[in-house]
Length: 430
Image (tube, rainbow, N blue to C red; front, side, top):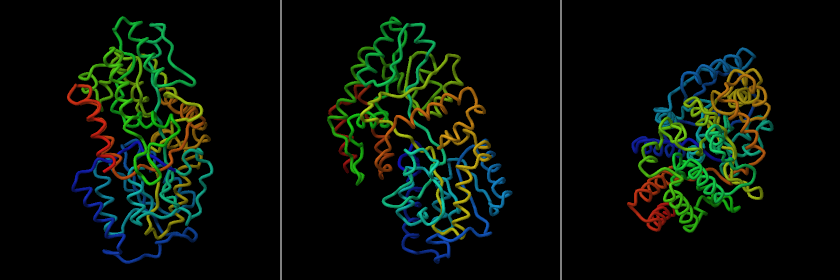
């Protein structure tokens, strides 16, 4: 299983604490070995702990699903729900004391760090059936030759269009196999048909996820197996130039509009009805649809049938502590949350889109009208995607932030495309 939507933004102090804690754990400092380390063996009656981040509705659904697990004969489970802010600080402290919860929610951007410091259990040491997972995410939690995470929920990038606006303008949204050049043509058609009243697409020049799709269209991976960057300066130069040309033509918003709406979905041009399309994660599509009376549709981004660039992404994963006293009990809980029909019904789409086709079919009639297209879209993604070759390497989050900053500087005319490309690769290669 491999990749990540959520990127962790910790303070420098938190990052240092985590690094130090993991280093101590790896060196065997600050605790003694426990019988749980190394995993294996049948489940016992030993109680287990489970931790995750989230908001109130996610806490409620997970707690209900876990209570049913215990009622059905599983071990007692004490829960440690947390908001996103503070979750990673607490895990860092728990790693230092070799006191991680038996089952813990992980982000794909952080999984390699925890796995490489021997704080997570290799899941081959327990009995855990992953065969129901979508094929593209069965190996998502792999680091090297071992698997340390099971996808809890999925998401994917989609091309979201305002169907009502396009009908009014008489412009058809791209579909089937289409290219980034087709995107530029579509955006210009919207601008022309509306007399310049609407932009064709939001500016995606600073979105590194989209740039990764752009590179993968060629059949290449964005990162090499060893984590070094596989994209080239020419790739990024062409990417920035494509968006600069659309910006100059008036088919994407100007720099000030893009900057004002960055990270602010309600202010996004698609939400405000001033742009016909944009690229969003499935959960953002759901949020967008609640903000507008217009009918929004979600479909594949530029799609190369020979080299599908899209991948099924992990919104979150479940891992097991390397120091668990009941690793099989922890594995049984994970399998319950992913595969048990009662748990699937309880969780619905609260964590994101379920990672199995059976689960998506089961909840299709119970999700909200806003959620249903996103759930159905994941079935399309499962049939038209290509797994990433590896999880994000260290530095991915920093590169993602830098690319957004450089794209904004280019848009405002504060730096040239060539200088932005040089700055990005100097950082990525370093």
